[in-house]
Length: 327
Image (cartoon, rainbow, N blue to C red):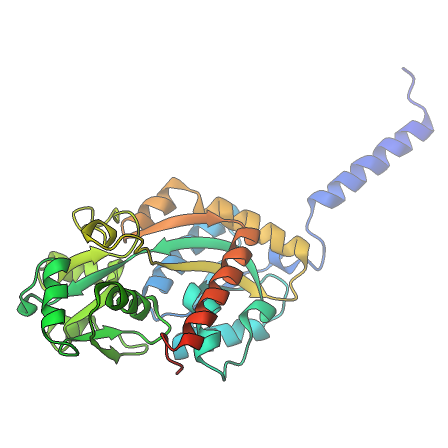
């Protein structure tokens, strides 16, 4: 076939268009600039560990473009979330948020400077984290049955720690009290970890993140009684679930996901979602997170938005009923 001038011009135009679509747009900040990932815990915390683990994998997906983890703890995540809400909505600033921050805190704190469902765009679900009920050896119990019996023998005589009314630690103990018919005194610690005091027998019990409690369990300074999820945790396979020990339906966990400022363009949000799902689905990432007692939950933006809406309605009802007190 003879190539005409008109055909040649058409072919060149098509190739030019294809090349243009393969290159980032001049104003596509996410594709060309470093990304800041804000985490709401201090260095060494679970959010910090998750952020750094996933950020490293995301850098590889982005072919070396930097992902910088920035720790902004304080006020149950409000400090970090407020910073991200005010950031440019161009994909260069993301927040690793907990379910408590997105679905519980709005109902226990009337003075939040943001509205999670209005001010943030869900990007991708990341991780499910079970909690484990731990007690100091001095309490003299080694099973959940023994713990419940001790609590029933002395209503309000035992104390338990949490990191605030909205935390999964408190919600798990409230659920156990309701199902077991026991009463304990709540000692909220806020942003400070209660584990040192717990190991020192200053408080009697706590539902703790596995990552934090694991070293103290292995050292014999804490006794694990039950995990909160419907299935056993891979990091503590010898510890039975609460459901296995007579409390069917007991299934609580903490989860984390990525959000961006609400005004982020849909095309940019979709690209970040795709990159994050690839980053989290790597076997090495799954293994690192599993070793800390958590499980990767590769969930798309739509699934995360649905979970936020459903859990928000449930938590709103809990607070309205007085089961969870306002701060």
